[in-house]
Amino acid sequence: MTVAGDDAGSGAGGAVTPVEPFDLPEWLGEGEVVWTAATSLDGRNRVEGELRGGEERLGCDVLAIDQAWPAPVLAEEWRRAAHGEWSRGEVLLVRFHDRLTLVVPGTSLAADTVLEVVGRLARSVGVPPSRFLVALRP
Image 1 (cartoon, helix red, strand yellow):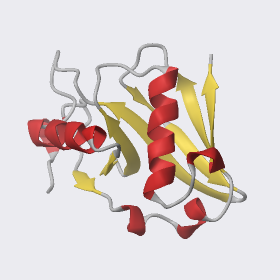
Image 2 (cartoon, one colour):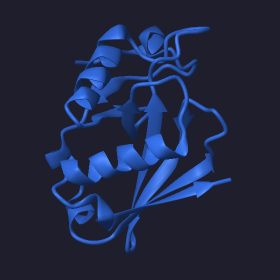
Image 3 (cartoon, one colour):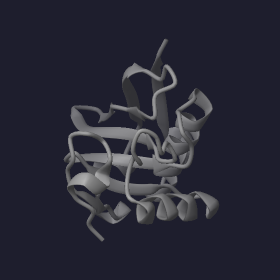
Image 4 (cartoon, helix red, strand yellow):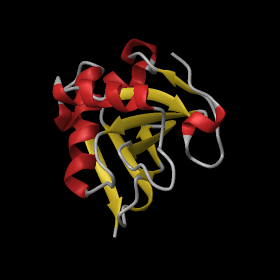
């Protein structure tokens, strides 16, 4: 499934493609991993971040998908997929703006949502959520 350009609804456009957990780097399942937010949550629907495990790094954003004004965040098919994954206790993984993006239901991000989504990412790569740490900015 690929959604491009205007369907992305982010202003800058770009393709959206699904990501399978087994396609992620192996180091995510091998040791302690820290997800660090690049900015504060501050009611945003998208927060850029980075996963770090030792010397390894991977850009990884969190995106709340339900904001519909002034334009949808992503196409409706992605919103449905995100809600479906969330209802099963999982998280939708996509590549958006050439970055790994964890897509969650909602219109804005809060600390508890980010903690939950990073925990779900940990489980998707086969490790307990306690192996992943979250660093947020005030």
